[in-house]
Image (cartoon, rainbow, N blue to C red; front, side, top):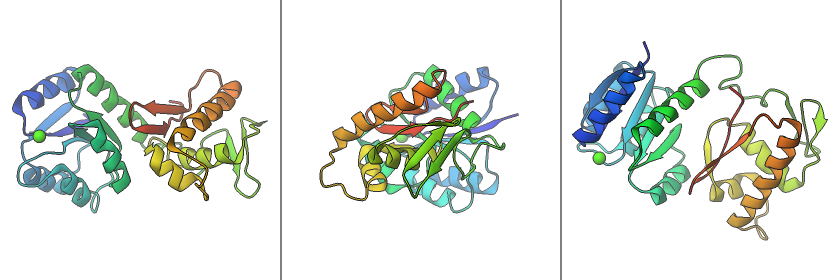
Length: 227
Ligand code: CA
């Protein structure tokens, strides 16, 4: 059975989340402080952890940081403010997703499912190469999808490189600017949106059945490999 650890000091939230996850067929375990959660996660990593940030004894960021020295299992952060997510993304702590409070338990279960699916061991998941069907030529900034050349601008190619090589990871606009472009003189964070839009359109022209780039509201973008 898939075991999910919930680390949340607000007992009402924890118990609702637990009910929904159990109902969805998951086994759950709850911790109300960071220290005991970390001990358990390190001793016996679950299939997934839901980790609140504001916690007694050891905050969620510290729990995540220390947990990552021992385990790569998927961790979804629960945060009170959307602005906080941008800062967290910049810290590159290795969370797999972020959910902002207040959230609907139903939405949370859907995110849990998506993260578990994405991180499930298999030939495609976690592979460091290019996404299936996608070929990148880093020297000439050329890309093709399922044999069809994509005809990308250099900016679009840079975004594709960063996003597609880290499937599932959420990148803020600021982080994309930093990673995808070697010169950022004439590029604003807003421009990223239009580059992403164009890239999405070009990918969508080849595979209309799949949307490769997920917009994370108020945060940024993530590459979504087909299920
Ligand atoms: Ca809390």
